[in-house]
Every structure is written in structure tokens, then in C-alpha cells.
Length: 387
Length: 248
Image: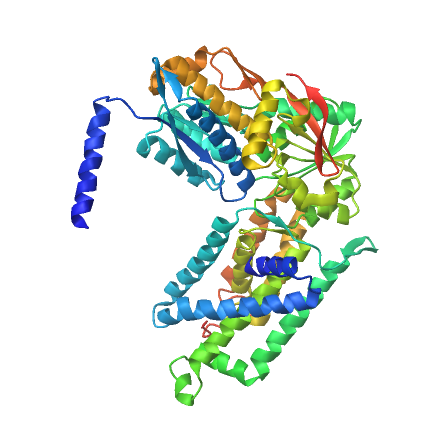
């Protein structure tokens, strides 16, 4: 027992020595930091499925083309439990111990923001497929873009504008109430930006109510909202909270329409929410109904492998790793600095969720959004919103 | 959480009427409660009190994370109870809420009666106040404590079933916040006093909701818990607690 431990540690030291001598790496190690357990398990599952699908496709073709040689990819998966502290610890472990070249994830903004601080300080490229909060890619203190952090999706600045315009113009609703989780980054940011834009465009926010993560009873807040008599209720909250809020609102006799953000985008929402969600609108990253040929192929592959249609988190994760892989191939070496330089040199990337273009020095892609409506338990495409 | 999941499993296997499901779940969680006592508490009977509290938290985390690793997904809970909404003098109520208030009222009165009047209740209170002397009087302390945990488990199971009917999304972490609130309510009311815990629970609930109605909802937890701190400063043993009483 003791001997084998000694042997193992000797081997480990030898392996480390081998690394420092820059001997040929057997595989490119990619870190995946996702929400497998905790409040958002379907986000983590979709993200992991899509990334594994992409990696399997590349490895089936022999691997990444690096310096004229095919090198396979090895995926190192870490669970962040949808918690900020665990996301930071997982990032630290993936980068420092597992020595990954780049990291995909986390998805929830509450996790992606602390993770991005660590990736930035350890100079490791990171891409968050689904985090829309501006603070993920921008340093809150200096207001500058983080050099190593990108995202695969639009930001809440854009999303709040899209939803505010949609509420005013398309739904012709002038009075909106907002209810959100004040303890979670993405909902908090979306609620405040929506309030700002909606008021600027001439709408009235009749009530601006909050709760904290883990709450299950919203009747006090909803009673207040009911008294303020809104036309719509904006719910920028995760799909796990939406069903309870909408059911309780209908029980209280509230008839206002519901509008949501991309935090709704899991098929789970319909399973949990049922009839109370019928007719609700939300903003999303892509729709399976307006798929390009590339998106169709992805949808078919995903369906074949996992027996379910990919949600937008899966699509964004697929694009995020695709973009990263392109950058690694462009860099030609497994060096974080070189990959970072290559990321900035790719002008645009055409993925499943449309074309991503990054402005100079920014980690935020310019992308369009879609508005979907929930009808008979399905997400039905309603409109496109270009940036 | 266990109560809610047990209920979900039961009703998805056999369509039981609500009351039968409730009683069946209470039996299951009672057995689980007694089992936890046997495995995790009895070996620590002579250890310092803090160890028992840590074990309690540990057991909770083990159960929660076991569920999480088996099934991290939240699930919808079927309605076992057709709920109708009433509008009464500006107050919106539904029959489910009334029913839950009723069932918990019956359970609370029942527990209060059992603890005060029955032999087992007297034995329980005696064990709590003097664990060294009571066995000398011929009271089977181990049986009394096991039964206490079984009753605790059964009540928690009932709470899980009722809660999952009111908020019909069942997940592994659903009980964490309520667990804390129950603990806070018990401390406010006075640890060891059942009537105090009930009072503490009602005070906590009323303060939370009133804060949301009167002030911005962001202030809810700040106001609610500050008020509770103030209560504890003036009544360190809780509202109905007495200084000498100690918990099993």
C-alpha cells in the first residue's frame, strides 16, 4: 500500500518533469465547468451533452489539427453545483491542477462572474456559453473588457432592450410589473436593465418586487403586483422558479400576460409549469423552427445521441466549444497565450445560433435574439430581433 | 424533502387518496426518523451537545446530496386535492391553504396533547429535563428517544406532503430554507417549548409577509431577522422558553 503510494507519487513527479520539458502532449485538455447539480441541473446537462457531442465529433475525425498533426481532445468535467463559491473552486482546480488549456462554462451568471475573475487572473481563456450578465466579460471596477473571457451569447443590455421594445410595441402594453430573484446575478441585472429601458421608452413600471433564491411562496409580492394592475408581468428568473410564480399568480386571479428572459429556456419549464404558462413570451438565443442547415444537422445529431431536442443552452455550448476549437487550431500550439491571440484574430464564427462577431478587444459577440411563445407546451417562434 | 419525494413516488406508483398518501408518508418518515436516531444520534448520546447539532446538519446534507446525485431534476407534484379560490372581503384564499392550516392545526393540537397528557409525553419531558435520573425510575430511555424521533419524522413527512401540494415543484433542496426557518421559529419561541415554536413560526411568517406588503420586498429578510434578533436580546430563552429546560 505504502509502496504503491510512493510509486504513484514518483510517477506523478516524473510526469510533471516531463511536462516542464515540453514533451509532446498526448491530448488537448479542455475544461468544462457546468451546473450538473444544484438549482439548475438541466442547464448543466444540456451544456455537457452539447460539448461532449462536439468533442466526440472532432475526435472521430482524428482530433484537432495542430501544427500538421491530429491531436485528440480530452474533456475534464467539473460540477459547479450552480453555486458561486463552488464555481470558483472548480475553475481553480481545472486550471491549476488539471492544467486545462481553455475552459468552457460556467453558464449561470452567478457562477460565471466569479469563475471569470479566476480565469482572468490565471491568464486562461474561458468562454461562457449562456451567461448574459455584462459583468462576466467586463471588469466591474475598471469598466474594461477582461482579456481572457468571452461569452457565446448576447448580453442583458441587448436582451433588456429587445424585451422592453417587444412589450411596448408588439404587446402594446404600457404597464409592466417586475418580480425577480434579487440574490442571483442574471435576474437582478435583467430586471434593472429592463426597468431602465422600459421607462425610457415611455412605459410605466407599476411594481418592482423581489425575493431571494430558494423562496417558494410569492403570494405577498404577487398580491402587491395585483394591486398595481399591470398589463404584463416581467419575470427574469430561472426556469425552476417560473412555474411556482405563474401558478400562484393565476390562483390569485391575476390575468396579466407573462414575459420572461432567456433564463426560461429549458423544456423543463413546461413540464413543471403546465397551463399557467400558456401564452407567455420570452426572449431566447435561437429557435429550432428557423434553423439553418448547420443548425439542422446539429439538432439531428443531438436528437440521435440523446433522444431529445437541444435547448438553447445546448446550442450555445456547441457554438462556444466550436469557436474555442477553431481558435486552438488557428493558434496551432497548446499555449494559452497563443490561443488568446488567436481568439482575437477570428473575425466571425458561424455557428448553430447564428453568426458571432466580436468587436475589437471585446468578449461579447454581436448576435440576434428571438422571441418565443409557449403554446401547447411548445416553444413557438414569434419574432427575430437584430442587434 | 423526503416526505415530498416519498409522496411523489407513492402516488406515481398507485393512485392513492390524499389522506391515505399523507398517512403512508408519515409512517415512512417516522421509520426514517427512528433509523437516523439509531445510527447517528445514539452513539453520540454522551458526546457534547454541539456534536449532536453537527450530526443533525450532517444527516440532512447526506440525505439531500444523495437525492441530488440520484436525481438532480425538480419534478412536478400532481395535485391530490382540487383547490378552489375564494374571494372574501378583499382577501384571496384557496381551499388548499385552508386545508393545510386545518391539518397542521390538528397535528399541533395532537402533539401538544400527547406531550402533556400521555405517559410517553411525560416520560419524554422527564428524559429531557434529567437524563441521568429518569432511567433509575424504570423509564426505557432508549425507547422514549426513538419514539420521539419517529414522531418528529412523521410530522416532518406531513409537512413535506402539505408543502409539496401548496408549492408543487419537488426538488432535493426544497427543504433547506424551511429547515432554517423552522429552527429560527423554535429558537424564537424557546427551544423545548412546542407552543413557543408554533408562536415563533406564526410571528416569523407574519413579519415576513407584512414587510413585503408595507416596505420594498428587498428588505424582507433584513427586517424579519433583525426583529427576531431584537426579540432574542430581550428574551434570550425565547418567548416561552425557560432557562433550565434542555433539549434531548
